[in-house]
Amino acid sequence: MKHIFLTVLITISLDAACQLPDQTIRDLKAERIKDDTSYIYRLPYPASERHLFVQGANSKFSHRSELAFDFKMKEGSHICAVRNGEVIAIKEDSNQGGLKNEYLNDGNHIIVRHDDGSLAHYWHLKQNGVFVKVGDRVEKGQKIGLSGNTGYSAFAHLHFKLIDKYGNEILPRFQTKKGPRYLRPGKWYKAVTD
Image (cartoon, rainbow, N blue to C red; front, side):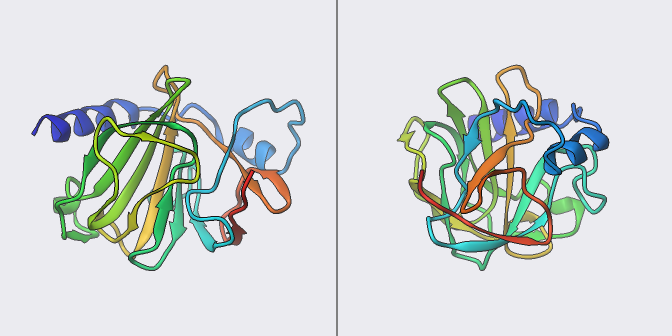
């Protein structure tokens, strides 16, 4: 119960505001902002796997005012840590999902606190598809769970979001086979090792 309360509290408080306007997001994706020293994350699935990036930051479907990312995955696909850190919350007991508000609290998930204080949220995981427990230390690239279709979800996928230590959402760059990139919806991205 404590973990559910903490997860709901974190989600409510952090979803309150999106810090980047649409134009800034477009500029970053188009590489018009060159002086970028932001951390480069690993894609949240195993090296050599490719997945379709279906929805990104501030999209008009369900990410309005949210810097979140949806990767289309078959149910049961491996989810990997994007950065080293400690698991601070998990939920894996739900088998409920759909596009009704009644499913909002049913999303299985993992939340990892990185060494710099930022948080990675991995949502819509498969029932009993969490490989880690609260307090576990995870390494970048480590398999931590399985994708699913739980919570407010239309199809099996991974909903991924990053929050900095101040509670601001982060628009991340990911390492791809073409180098560090801000991802663009509608494209396939292959995970690579560092």
